[in-house]
Length: 421
Ligand code: GLU
Image 1 (tube, rainbow, N blue to C red):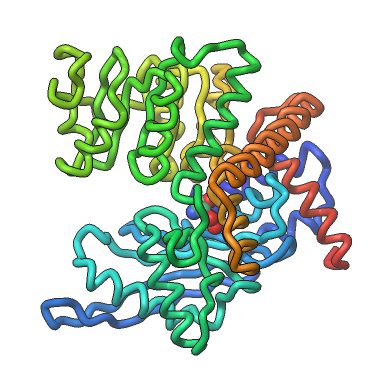
Image 2: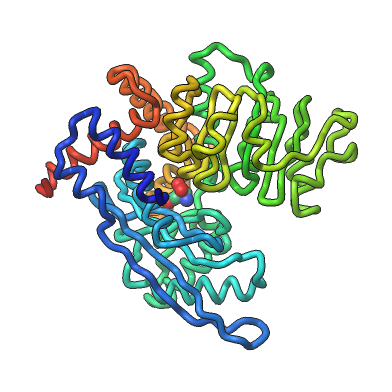
């Protein structure tokens, strides 16, 4: 089953529980617009390479299309369709006046120079320019794209329009129309939800061990935030492999080491983990998933827990900070093992929520303080959690299906109000 088919399957399961109007499901089962672009870019050595990129606009029922742009060698139309539909659902769960979209370019950015990345980004913007705009479709960072890439996008789009259009993307640098708190908003949003969930179970941070798969913007920041709150972060990993320190690793030193050495696998020595003796050891990404820890945080890519490894998962609580890290089949296996999953469309919605704040600030060109943003973000995340929890109790279903139900019911109302169904 492909990632998009998987996503549809989960949405259909939720629709079935609430006997959702077939027309609503049909409208949301297909993206409104899918675009593939192919464009040549001159590389530093003078050769020409043709790049393939995508933008999928899944639904603008609730407002302008919204969603990140990913640079990765595995980007495909199917993946982008799945991610775009998850964006529609995510924005609906946290009640943002935004639709869902996603984009990407199929290439490994680590193999290109900074100048090449800039030229690839600008060439992509020229190709998708007719589709995007502050009230049309607003891209943002995703896997392997950051504030710098967003600044190039805003700059190129502004040049094409011969005026300043900073609001065409979110996740920009704070100095150039970005929002305070956006860089770690996804991670911070996840910690708010985790607190709510653990609060319900009466567990204290210092008694809670956490393993984190993925050490990009989301995984790295959530490791820092949780460690600062006293959680015992025992394992982290990146695309090269993982590091396991049973007594809890030093998150900040690990972050510094990763920047210096290139991978967390190099960060187990006593210079980085002085309080661990020689207890740290390298683990593979697969082993990390199977560690016996209280909370497992998935912050890498999709399809990490599948029917093949679901049975081996020991953690009783999974926080999905990546999009689609658990397949539909694995979801059923984990449910039978009584493993609680806090689903992506709720857990990682903090990023797009602060993106929405950035859009609002850009419209006014007036910028808010960090504490104001954090407070507003917390309110939205906690409200969404309460709604999902109540829905899960009402229908005796998982948090994942409850989150989809919350999203679908909201989208249904909007589609009725707009006269679509
Ligand atoms: N790429 C992020 C996500 O998957 C953020 C999207 C946005 O801010 O528009 O939620």
